[in-house]
Length: 302
Image (cartoon, rainbow, N blue to C red):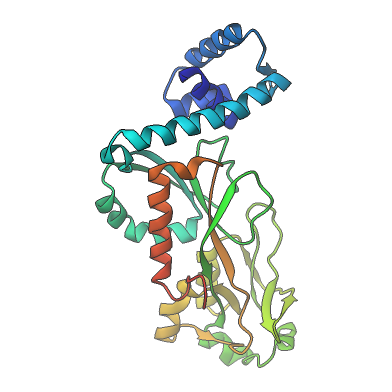
């Protein structure tokens, strides 16, 4: 069973070294385990080259069976080991988008720790698209439409956006009164840190989505930087409502084009297949969901 667990982790990480790090074991130990397992089964499971690992046909079939067997064992044990065995415990590796993590999750993380003190959180903040399987991440929060993936996605919120500008900008350039007016305005360009492509602005009008390509004097790949530039009057900005609500209250920013709201973006928790059975992942997902339910700018339904 230990060999099966080791094999599954190596395949998920696609690396002996990365699997050894997440299992907190010497790489040599994993190599020996795989050698013994293949000898016991009488077949080669992995094809190793200097650059990558790949499963043999027998390895692919054995991997599928291992995942099923290990999942069934864990589920069976939870039924009989008593209520304490179902208590969330152990290390939980979570990946969060930088801005969302800093502004929405981390300010409340002490509440999660108080509720589940035996869960050891390892939180990474990054806007790059991490390989959850390869890097041993238990779950990751994502904003936006999900790409096709072998991962499971569970929507936990819906992020509302606002188009806004500083009073100094509006005094100088005027206030847009229609979507078509945007062609005469400067905007803060927000581009993807992964692809380098600028995000178009999207508006909902007559139950249809209208895309607008914007331009301006500054382009940034960070949501906080987007707001920072808007506060200095460098152009119109489209930002998460949760980011700018205090600035809108104080008057440092003013909402424009309120009749045409930007399209909301789904917020989803991603995790590898079978990982949600873990009590620690379940409670984290539930906690995130309840956290967002209490925020009108992040609720599933407006």
